[in-house]
Length: 90
Image 1 (cartoon, rainbow, N blue to C red):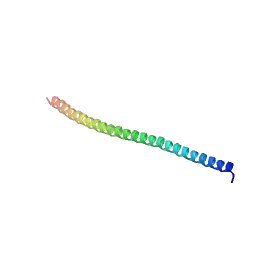
Image 2: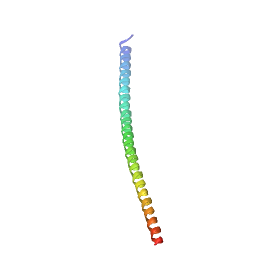
Image 3: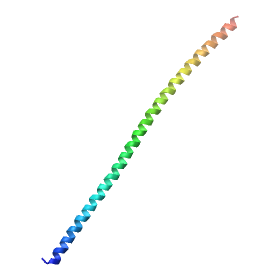
Image 4: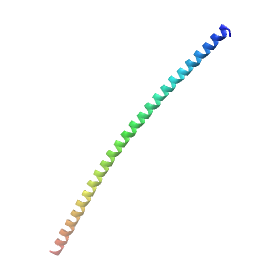
């Protein structure tokens, strides 16, 4: 094998190692970017879950308040009915 051929093989081997190394870095960079997107999506999901829990609590409170108002209205209607009937009997 000639010196020239040996150097060509060495250059080819070096180029192959360089390309493989750069591909590994690109893959690592892609993995890091992908992990950042996953982390961001997970954070968004956690925030949405917290918002949903807060909305559910607010909804439960609104329902409780509405039920109390309904009970008060029914009680008031009953009292007014009794007062009207009592006034009619006089």
